[in-house]
Amino acid sequence: MSFIDQFQADLEALPNILQKKYALMRDLDKSLQEIVRQNEQRCEQEIEDIKRGLRAENIRFSDEALDEQKHGIRIADEKVALAIQTYDLVDSHIQQLDQYLKMSDEELRRERENAATASPVPSPNSTTKSGRSNESGRGGRKKTRLATAAAAAAAATEVAAAAAENPTGMELDLPVDPNEPTYCLCNQVSYGEMVACDNPNCKIEWFHFGCVGLKEQPRGKWYCPDCAALKNRRKGRSR
Image (cartoon, rainbow, N blue to C red; front, side):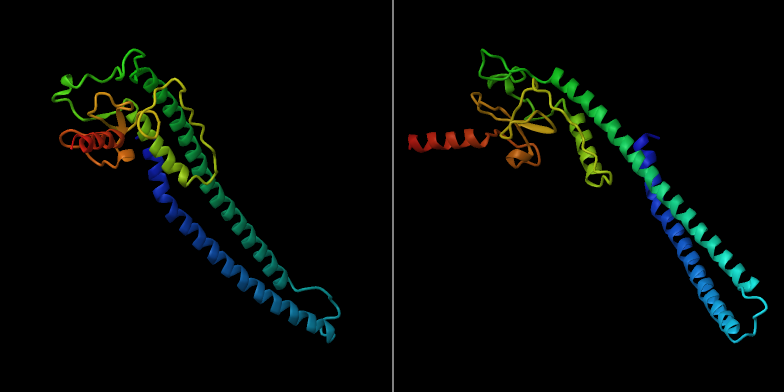
């Protein structure tokens, strides 16, 4: 079982454990309140007896009153110990989450390093990117691809989801390789599924699905917003 699977299994059991501990603390609190109430009544009665001179020979609380007070102290100590156990239990899960975030951060760093090495590098003597063939050589080629940083994107999504509920407020350091090429309208590195513009002279060429409003592989030829607008203007002029 992986670390995250074990952490999720422990986390699923945490609410039931906390509920039992809180219920026990509530029962102890009720018992303590009842003992305090009884002891206050006993002490008030004994004080009245002393004032009336019924117990002048021994001006002190009875053994019963003192035993009740000691019993109340024991219950209070038990409540404190239970509260500390509950706090430590939650804190241990927070530490496990911190450990998982650090592991994910390191994994993401490695994936970005691999992605920077495997990503296509633009050729200075060509208007198209090295990872893309010309228009005639694209027959039958899939319009979409899983970027080499797909694993990194999946890890980043998982880290972001965990960080959204991060109780420690820990900031994650996710550096971006300045040498890694960027694409799309967002001018970001490649990740997830991307689609290529069918205009061989497109300056950007590759686009993230989400940035161009796509949810699945387009059928037939597909043009980016800029190239589609340019194509429509040319059609308008030809008319």
